[in-house]
Image 1: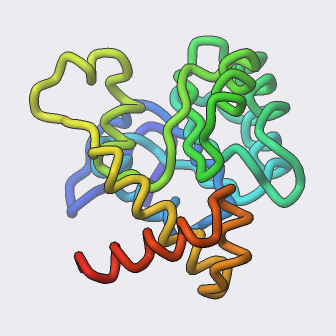
Image 2: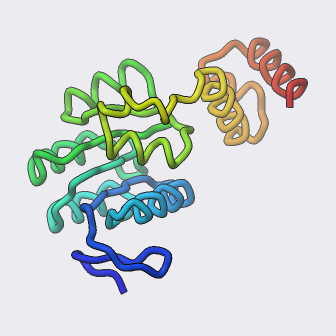
Amino acid sequence: MQTDQTAEHSGRSYALRGRVLLADPDIVATASIARQFRGCGYAAVIATSSNEALQIVSRKSIDLALIELKFDDGDCLELISAIRLHNPCSRLVVHTWFADVKATVAVVKAGADDLLPKPLNAEFVVEFLVNGDRLAMSSQTSLPDTESVRRAHIETVFGWSGRNVSLASRRLSLNRRSLQRLMQRYRETA
């Protein structure tokens, strides 16, 4: 049984380190990150919509928050403001497929501490959210190389597009031929 003060992981009870809000419509990815947080001693609260996350924030104290930029029922900017209003000292990171300079500026201006692009492994995301700026000084944790993140993003969007090159190239803002060459190169190196 899990309460607000204690948790159980691997058959052992321990005091909770805090509560983390995971707000993301992709419940599969969120579940693996939630397991990582629980393993670190945090109580993970999952929301799959912006409205659900807003209700959680108004009722519960949040120490850490990892949220997606876009939801079916809106974006995260209102959620960021609500988290800052109810929990001004919480650490707030946006983790999204839609990471670009414009999005980063918007979420930081709204009150987020940082923005991480998807896909990143769950262990790295948890370490980044928990340790924040100290992560840069850590020799044990390293950022994934940009080429592997780029490749994973392109392959994911290509899959979402039903393997349709024209549709994927529009979604990625890439020339169709450039995308075809990239996909050919990825197939050759796989």
